[in-house]
Image (tube, rainbow, N blue to C red; front, side, top):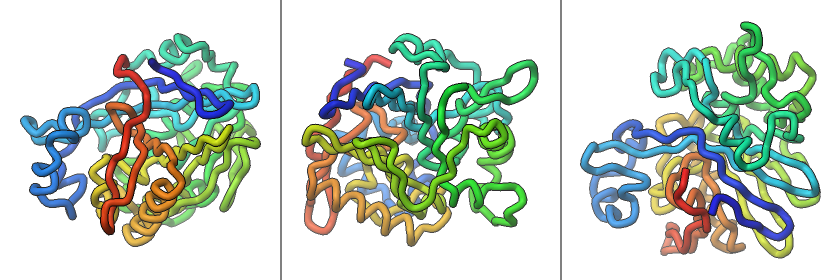
Length: 300
């Protein structure tokens, strides 16, 4: 099953690609090997390959059909992008648009694109090459971008990003062309997409990292971008990834999110999870645990 409904909103998962990535100690330097070993039974193989000593990750877009509109949450890595510091992202050639078409979404059908933040693996399909120039992939869409991230990553900002190398070229090829086309909405603090969907800042991973909340028919879900990179952070909410710009703020945002999700029964969708791609969480002492997984199937 690639789709299911939450209230009146249909949620569909479209996978761009998945891959092994860096060792756990590199990605999460504050999490020791015992945590991984003690949780091997459910972290492997979807989220961690203990034999290879590498984490597993997935690039995916969530398609929401809400109030007659088609909304994409994050747009992955994209094709033809120059990412010299990240070989797995460099000059990709995937069939992502065909995968979108397979679930009934053509580029011209998209009404709204949500970029939870402006890292390379969340904005890649914002644009595609057309006659040698970058043009918005979704010509009829409003692209919702957090202003704090736009201003932080703007080449003229003078910001000293700790992830500058990993995000080289991203603003020029995947953000600026959308702004120049007049399709970007640079929102601040909070933004109501429609009656069921609301964006709010959850800073730390980046200055404008955001959470999209879905409330419909008594159902609640949160699309959290990279607030959680791996479900091990549900157990260890004070552990940041190596890509967080402000580690202290990231921990505050993550704990606030998990507390809310546990108390309200929200289904949590991080951007890169394999397996069910999302989880309901419960309190476990001063931390949290997975209560159940999202009802997606495993065909990708």
